[in-house]
Amino acid sequence: MARLPRLTLPHYPHHVIQRGNNRQAIFASNADYLTLLDLLSQSASKFEVVIHAYVLMSNHFHLLATPGSTDGLPQLMQAVGRSYVRYFNAAQQRTGTLWEGRYKSTLIQSDRYLLSCMAYIDLNPVRAGLVAQAGDYPWSSFGHYVGQRHEKLITPHGLVWELGNTPFAREVAYAEMVQAGISAGQQKVLTDSVIKGWALGDPDFVADLQKRTARRVVKGTAGRPVSSKISP
Image (cartoon, rainbow, N blue to C red):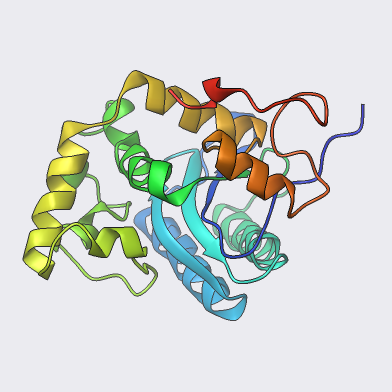
């Protein structure tokens, strides 16, 4: 069975994951993490993709990004992927592939899942047992949102601005949101949607998306009613 093309539409937030081949490490030093972040920043500017959140793990990374065009996100991922492999192979004196095939991604409904997706991304190191608190991990966007540092790579989504009337209030609110965590149901649908490539949102959101693309946006036979069970 031919695989479906990726679901990519401009002006919607996309949750993206790229894994190392056979779960191998994709970083060997702090310089490697910094290089990937720099490549992401350059390509985001070049291809008009706004990056809201990220986490770089030892063998994969996540992004939450909104492209300005249909081709923007694929172009960014292709450019970053190729450049980083060349850099990493040269640094490690190795050859061959680094990535586990093509990246995976999905669209998410902003008002229902965007903040949860950000918390999901920032909590990856905690779930993996690498740190006790999200703020203890240096390679995620969490530090930017709680005022630990400023990253030019990050552009907050409008929903983040609604967390408070001042920068300090937003930082506190975001830290509290991540500290509170997300439910098991939210974690499951966020994981399943990005791995399987189906849109994540309520039935009205999904129905509206389907009008904008010929590609099926949820699993099932075309024309079937969208199940309300897509949300936890």
